[in-house]
Length: 279
Image 1: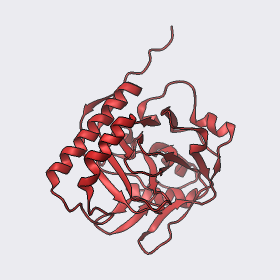
Image 2: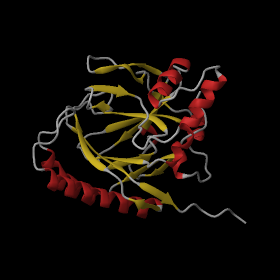
Image 3: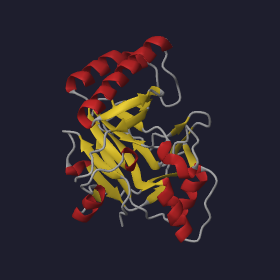
């Protein structure tokens, strides 16, 4: 059953109901490049029911950290971004940096990020208070996970980011992550629509203690709830998602068309002007 939690805020003209699917739980990530505890959604995707859509679409505004936001780059911005950045990613792969000089690449990434932030402000009233790190990542097609540990050289599957090392009770304070598809084929984001505080509450209700690390929390949660639904959102070229990946279990997956997968990742302190309560 899909529980209330993270909702879906659609600021995208490209998104349709068939672009979100649901899986009945998790399974081990196959392949020699997978971490021992790596988990991905079960391959039994189906459309959402009306009741499940209602869980993701409460109607009333919710805080930015309680939702996943979908937004489109303008077509002209997508073309400019691809033309500007993609040639500078030559030689990049899941385990290898691009072969060209770093400074032009950093400048191009910054330009794309600026376009993305302008889109968030224009389409969703989401403003940037502090600019954080950004990078462009290239993956092979056909990947069931895009969460790659560069130090240990394996894919992690569904996970919680930990860049700012917030306590489990303060994950809502972390920078949200914006990821835009800059490739030429669809890619996907997988996520569990529950925040860390909900994961901990469900573990307590099942009689388990709360682990000290996010990695152990992920393992304990899925051991106790292997049939927790996982959602999949399709991201077409030029589409982006925004969510607090330090507070939400998530992963990515790439296309099956044989094309390189290119995504830009940008973490920033963001805020949104919430509507005033009705009087």
